[in-house]
Image 1 (cartoon, rainbow, N blue to C red):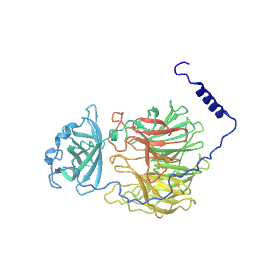
Image 2: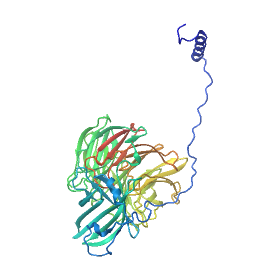
Image 3: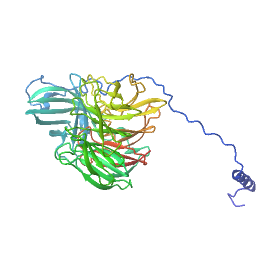
Image 4: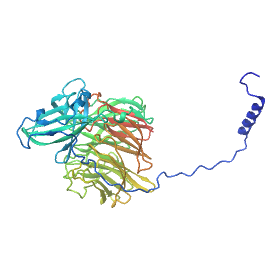
Length: 541
């Protein structure tokens, strides 16, 4: 017998086992285990802490002149840095994009963005060119501009860098016509990938990346008929917003089909489709309707409702209804209900507002329709629930509100589903410190907070899509995040892709830069718009 050959006994036993396995007599079949709901619907309500919590001064430095003193604010000697660890600033790179949490000495929040380019050219602070740019060894940055005949200055002076977190802390002053108006301390985070993360995790893969010819800020995407409709906004005169159409029948190789911009009307922020109609949200003319009988060649049909200019910012389609949310020019924003049973001929049924008219930004922003209810993100007024079964008589049922004192909390976007027989809403704000909130909205008159998810304080959530028990987030600087929300009280991140890179063309100092728009249409892919990189397509998990 050759070395390593099986013995006859082994062969016999093996054949017997093989014959038993091949027997046409079925063995006993165990019934599949019954499905188990991972969450039984119980929870302990959480305390709302708001998005920004005053932690006290960020650095042991100060601006020394008295309030109202006429000085040259752009003079670093006006800051007392005697207790600072200035040598720690030597570790800074000579470039970077920072989001800066500003705490005024009176205890209220503010924030600014800073960009110091890698090529050594002039950087920006809140989009304004820097007049002083000293990094590294120092973190001294200032800007001067004129607004309504008032000369304004903002000056940041670093005090130290925390070795463990990389955060830069220091002091700031804001001046008007040479007079110091407000000052305090700051905490600046560089927008490189946080927590030492890799580019991606959890099997989320970039299938394709396609630039968008329009020069505006790319904002949203909607996918239908194997085409992706991307809208862009013209924030400044030099940029061109509008609509870009891609054939995505092969997601690994999107094909540009058309760009559309209307003269004087190309601040387009959102898109939706129904059958052969494409709806685009316009800041000027409300709902712009296109015929997409040929999906690659949208043909302008009309703008509704017509009449006075109307700023429509977002959409949500639900059956034969299209909900269009307008932050203005109505005094406090409004929501419009259209009948789209004939998709190319939307009919305005109603328009309504929330009851709160006193909050600091009482402006409507977004909505989500679910089971005859409309959940409206209404900035500082909160997350407002309406019964919209009767379109002619929407009834406000309840609101989840924030403590807005010394807080930048706002409601910006959301998604709603059913978990363990309860109606659960996922709600997020926009701006520094914003987080994902999980709310039980089963009883709109009593909405408790039951879960949260947040990343770096200095970054912001934007949009979200709930697909079964997974929540897909575009998180600006934090890229794309995928959460398992089968246990809503404990959202668990299962995948990510960092889309933001400082070296990407056209990056800015804005906190609203990075992954912004997202759709998960059910074709096996995730479609994301990045403000700089364009259309990114990923595999659906």
